[in-house]
Amino acid sequence: MIDIKKTDELTPQELVTIFKERTKVFVVEQTCYYQEVDDNDYHCFHVRLLNDQTNELMAYSRIMQKDGYVTFGRVLVVERFRKQGLGKQLLSAVLAFIAANFPGQDVEIEAQAHLTKFYGSFGFKQTSEVYLLDNIPHCQMRLTAADI
Image 1: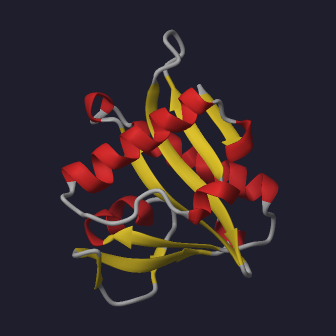
Image 2: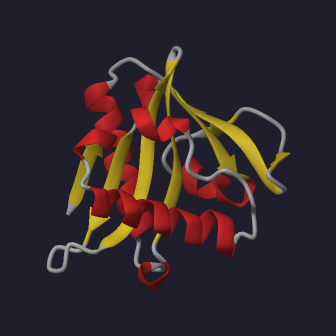
């Protein structure tokens, strides 16, 4: 089940679960020490893929509107649910939400470089050279509103 809520619509338990999983993936697994929870979390949409039976978090991303475009990030699949195609299911839901709620706006992301093929399968085009962000190779990618 896909669930999309603004931060102030989440229960404290839901928010803590999101932050715990994000920290597991982006800080601990990737050994990348940075301020993972940030001010963007106050004003974003949290997209959660939940287990239909247990309501357990399986995959997650957040969506934010920026000046002139929309972005999403913190895309993750909880470790025990990986290799089941949930990333594609999550990204499809993210893009459907963006198309419905931010019509006519392009989507720009900072993608980890090893995921350019994954995002490319959804129509994203690489728009920058690879650069280091928190010691992890990234690149800018863009999807035009017409291609969503």
